[in-house]
Length: 315
Ligand SMILES: Nc1ncnc2c1ncn2[C@@H]1O[C@H](COP(=O)(O)OP(=O)(O)OP(=O)(O)O)[C@@H](O)[C@H]1O
Ligand SMILES: [Mg+2]
Image (tube, rainbow, N blue to C red; front, side, top):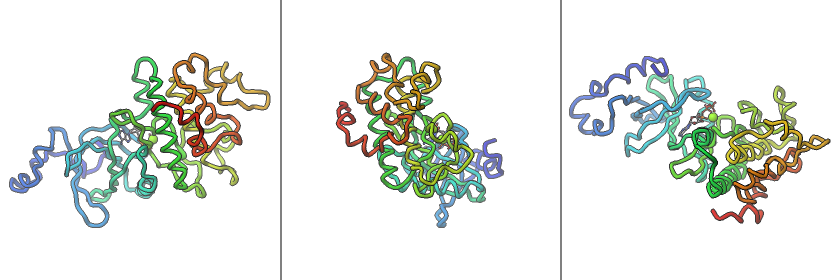
């Protein structure tokens, strides 16, 4: 039984038992509900009551569950992030940040609701048809096409540049937090680790996406003078690297050997000739610059967007 609460057990009963005939007709709910759907009665924190329709569990998230459902009003597919009350403030913060960084490549979030009993908090957001970039790439045969790589590069850099322009740092940018719509467009999601640049602390992150200069600071607060946007910039580079090669950088001895005697590894040397053949010269250049081992040389995303090579691609 999901969530393990009495409320869920209660709403799991067939909906027909919950409402009278006339009310059911008025809501036209039978046209919306399928056999295994579950409904939850919620309140939005300002007294407005509503019904959420849960259709299928997508996955377990770090703090709760991700559920696919439909919107009661227009019957469009939506996705819910459901957490227990103790994570309420975290989810509210994530919601507020996602509303502040509204952009075509950032996942739209629509509402926060509270279960009537008050033990669950739910964020309603757009559904991403292909889930995340990792799931999509792991399931596909062969490699991503050059045109699609260029499209992803433009979208991911634009989306994250916008986040930075609003003064926020994502802090956990990895391939599972980059979602894909039905037309394979990018939507950056999971702002659960995000914060204002000035307040940012390293909390939850995937170590495979942590820039090398932060390795010594995993257990301690990052130095005051460190610009945390560099974490996202490196993360964008690693996500794009993975999209091209289907593996992580620095996983092979031969890749590590491209690090010079000072410990610097110019990102450009990470991409092999075979990989370069499958992407545009612009793509290889952008990935190389974002994944510069030397943080001082790693450019800001707005700088990348202004460069000719970024704008040379067809998409
Ligand atoms: N709107 C959505 N549409 C489709 N899939 C989604 C959506 N939101 C989340 N997911 C899927 O659920 C996963 C976990 O979501 P999210 O990253 O927001 O949760 P989290 O609490 O941060 O969990 P985690 O610790 O696993 O990152 C995503 O990687 C993605 O596969
Ligand atoms: Mg996540």
